[in-house]
Amino acid sequence: MNNPESQNQFVPKQAIAPTPELYDELVIDCMEKLAAATVSHLTPFPNGAKIHDNGCGTGAATAAIMSFISPAAKISINGTDINSRAIEIYKRQAAEKHWPATAVPMDSTALSYASELFTHSIGNALLFVLPNDGVDAVKEVYRTLKPGGIAALNSWAYQPNMEPIQVAAQSTRPAGTPLPRQGMDKWLQAEFLQSVVEKGGFERQKIKMVQSEVFVELGDLNRYATMLWSFIGGTSAVGWLESDEQKWEEAITVVKKELKKSQGTRLLDGGKMQLRFVANIAIATK
Ligand SMILES: C[S@@+](CC[C@H](N)C(=O)[O-])C[C@H]1O[C@@H](n2cnc3c(N)ncnc32)[C@H](O)[C@@H]1O
Image (cartoon, rainbow, N blue to C red; front, top):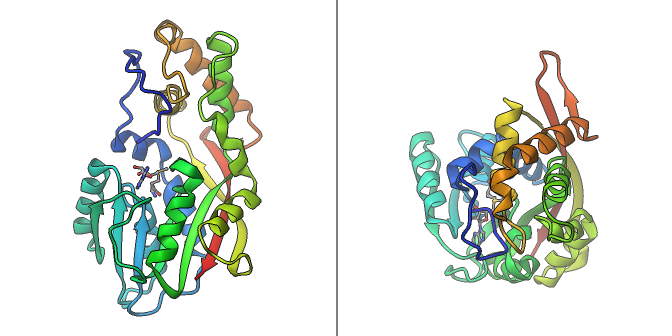
């Protein structure tokens, strides 16, 4: 679920397991807001729209789509994700919330769908977790869209919670230790997302690029910092270090301190903290 770069099996005893449940608690409503911002750049879904929620996780993009459509709209949604546990949670939500949706485990880089099946495909916070920068997955998106079909894909242009993790890693690990999510910087540029979508088969002049802000309110800061360090702290090319267990509290303290001083955070009335994210969004027509 958290895309580790190493096979190292050691995990500090304080780390919370990176389950879909932890992911949901950690992202709060950030993924749904990112999906809502993305979907808001689409024209309304017509009756009969057949939508692929690609790398659906537990269903944030489907939830955003359902808030966007009129109650009478007749659409269908196919969720797919490589994580079977996330698919189970998606299916439970779909049943509880009466989504017109089904979900199955499937690899985005090798979809088992027929070509020209979908009118829309949304990949919310997906491409940057995939191999080959998501190009193989975009090729599959292109193949499975009908002519004139629309893909909505995004990446982060700014994430206020990445630097605190990297500063915590730098200040609690030996110099030169690879940093978690070190290779992510290229995704900050809208041009990089656009080039991936183009390499996947979409014509450049049919790719509209936009940016949107997403604001998220944190609950308990200590819990948030612990979840963040647990989820991402051990994902570098070397994984967790044995010393991370002794330095656990030190790392959490650094994460909290850096979050507080980040330019993307704001203290709200009542003492709660708000994080500001910025998304790059590509709306591409086949
Ligand atoms: C950052 S999460 C976003 C999930 C969801 N779209 C959302 O908005 O909450 C990335 C998702 O991609 C899934 N994933 C990773 N590699 C995948 C692959 N090869 N094929 C399909 N899904 C994949 C993960 O399991 C995870 O659910």
